[in-house]
Length: 484
Ligand SMILES: [Fe+2]
Image 1 (cartoon, rainbow, N blue to C red):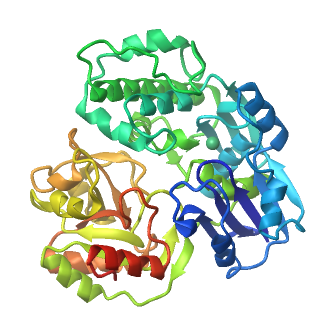
Image 2: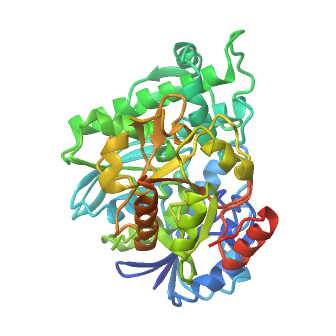
Image 3: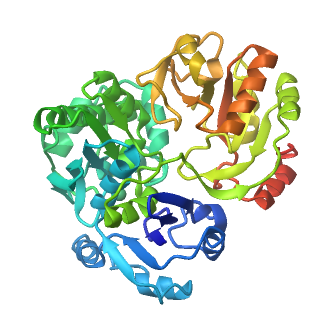
């Protein structure tokens, strides 16, 4: 058994893998209760041990190139030496291999895709040095065809503007994406002129190192934060679409794998899918650094993993009172569910979820009374897959991990799950995705005639998702809402 580790990357994680089987994978923050915890956690390690004992460790990132780049960019080397961190957890007796950052992203994507061959695009803020890489993947492994290095970085560009509009960099990029629908891209050309020497796809050159943000930039008077968000989103989409065109014309595969933190941009993902250049697209549901706990092992093993879904974390092994939940939903109540294994990745997909009837004008307000999130942000729908086409114009057949947005055909009926541009971040649910959640949706459909539930993460704003049953009981106590 091999333990993959991602640490000191603003969302530490571990994955225990036995040959092709992913036995367990989890985020530190869910155990330490520190949002985006960047270091490993003892309780996380104890949870891992329920699934086996590793004989080897693979560490995501090569220490020397990373430290060299950190020194170059004016940062200190490792905050904690990996060996010291392993010693603290009594793991220092195990042999350790180190693998490259972008190769791990590419391996996480390709080896969970099920594709026999693929073109792999990785776009993030910074690896050791890489910020964009393009790979050809097949039975011979991964061959890098293109790379762009720090300080040129599309991910850093997006993060710099996340900070510019007053959001938290490396954490709230998804809010910048959400803000884009409320603005107009009226400064896209100006931003491109001010920030890029040239801008093609995949090639580009930034005029400035954006590692410390771009707060010095002066937006023209009268331009709102939402217009800036729309402009930056348009630039990202243009870059990605140019890049996938380049891949389509220069690499042989019909399949595309997209990885790295930028692959969390579900609006851009949908534009790529709608282009229809590729027969199939796979984005591993945890495409950022946390997912590379799996990717590091995949990069070492160079063999396909048996991907069974994103439910890989802490297990809450309890019966689910489906009738009780449906009755509460019929009363118009918000229902909390903490059941089965926790999702590995940023989205709650039914096992650590808050659910309610998505119909009617007040659905969003009922949910927001608990979630207290920005009023402009919509909630996501979970839909019985076979009913999806009635309500949504999907860019892909299935979307079990909420990685794509779809045009909503019934914004009149479902305002709480529609954004200002009438799109929804859809989760399609088949029996094999999650049998219990599927059974709950089916029972809700039978009782209500509606095959959709509003689905958002079971947490309090600013806190990580509920992980254990103890967390669920604390959540219940704070919110006065029963957790099922
Ligand atoms: Fe990364």
